Amino acid sequence: MKKQEAEENGAAEIRPPVIFLGTNTCAGDMFSLLNSLAPGYREMLTDLIDCRYNYLLMAAEGEMALNALEETVKQFSGRYILVVEGSVPTRSNGLYCVIGYKNGRAVTALQAVRELGPGARYVVALGTCAAFGGPYAAAPNPSGSVPVQAVLDRPVINVPGCPVHPDWIMGTLAHLVLYGEPELDDFNRPKLFYRETIHNLCQRRHYFDSGIFASKPGEPWCMYKIGCKGPVTHADCPNRQWSGEHLSWPVKANTPCIGCTSPEFPEGDMPFFEHLPDVKLPGIRTTADGVGKAAGIITFLSIGAHLAGAILTGRLAHTFKKGFSEKGAGKIKDSLRKLLRKSVS
Amino acid sequence: MKIEKPRHSMINRLLHWTYAPAVLAAIASGFYIHKPSPFWGFKSMDSARKTHFISTYILAFSYLARFYSALWDKNYRELLPSRRTLAALPGFVKYELFLTKKKPEFPKYNPGQKFLITSLAILLPLLGVTGLPLYAVDAWQKQPPAVTGGLNPPRKIHYLTGVATTALIAPHIYFSVTDSLAKLKSIFTGYK
Image 1 (cartoon, rainbow over the protein chains, first blue to last red):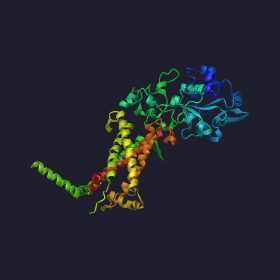
Image 2 (tube, chains in turn purple, red):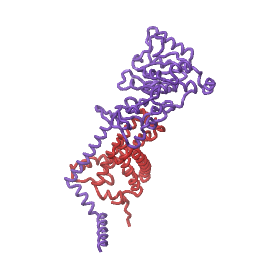
Image 3 (cartoon, helix red, strand yellow):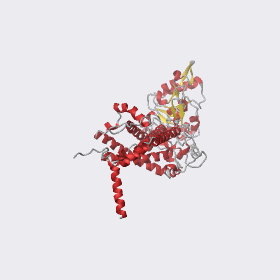
Image 4 (cartoon, chains in turn yellow, cyan):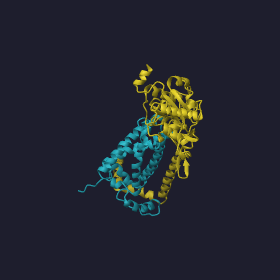
């Protein structure tokens, strides 16, 4: 039944071959995937996918591992799912990330992604680094790291998160296997998990609407004033909660959301405990609030100085004197006088 | 009998008094949304957001109407800085810095007003462009922020543009009240 349904929906087969390729990554997304409970990792391997290569968890290593990779590409071209975890370093021909050695020559992550990507049925960018560059591509980005999409001339399904929630990747894989490609948003994220903002789903939304805000982490109110990125972050953390057992999530633990599923993460969200990112000008780095305060002070002082000048030079007095002695003002004065006389008499 | 042409046409005066309170409401509610504080006159985020959205809708439509009106009656010629404006700038600056007593005369708007109005004409659409993705987070997810990433960078640009707009409107109000009462009257009655 499952197979029939899958075929009808355009999915290749029940257990398609899957390659988990690690590039510039902390492996946090793979560890997060291991926290999945329904289905669990074991169930995923036996019922959902045919795992042919996993950079972190496979027993094989060295050439044996690379051979498994090559075999999969040859045997299942156009049918396998490529899951890339991490950003792809491009500097020095990708030598900042080497996945192994073949015949004594380094096989770079850049080379691997470029060779494996075109033949895959689907390419999934696992975690924020793979999807949008993330911390590895943050300034000064010495390795020239880029997201997976930047080195492939084909659509990539982005499943961001730092780390990714186990359900987001497990659910995306399950959808690919059973129903084909899920509906994606403007940043190629499955709408299944990234449709709504954290803010709209937040259990503390009523505190936000009512103006009840935490002034420091640890308080049980809305985290907006201490830099919560919930209003500008798309993910279902408040509903789904972390991790496999769905127990808690940052705001529930009384700390702001840092916006880890957003394309601008982490630089565009920093400082995490500030409402807005810093403003960088040549030679100056300040907070957005700092700019606001400076603009306010300069405006106030400029107007104040001009007003003082206008008073001291007699310009202001002249303006009012002239204004009130003019024709129109005279008429107003006359009518007021007449009105006053009438009311008195 | 000679009919005097008004300094500000009826339609421009009506539009001015439509968007003037809308701008002030948008500024106050915007600063509350940025950093909630009773100082801005709101009790809750709910009321601040409603005020912000309603006032920006009014502002957007009256801005478009004013833009059209400026094109229709060729009023933009008076509003935009020209070479003559640049030539008159040093004299104007000298007067405003109290370096000369002689007040320079201008046909309608002085260089300061022209630069201010032109800056607002640029800043207000920028506020709209960066505000839309924050207003409709799903529909406008990638439109303007495509260059900058997600929603947080346009949020920063929106705030900084709001600060710049406020910093321009404050001197506008100050000079309106202190420069010439006759000119101030004309924005109410049309005539000096």
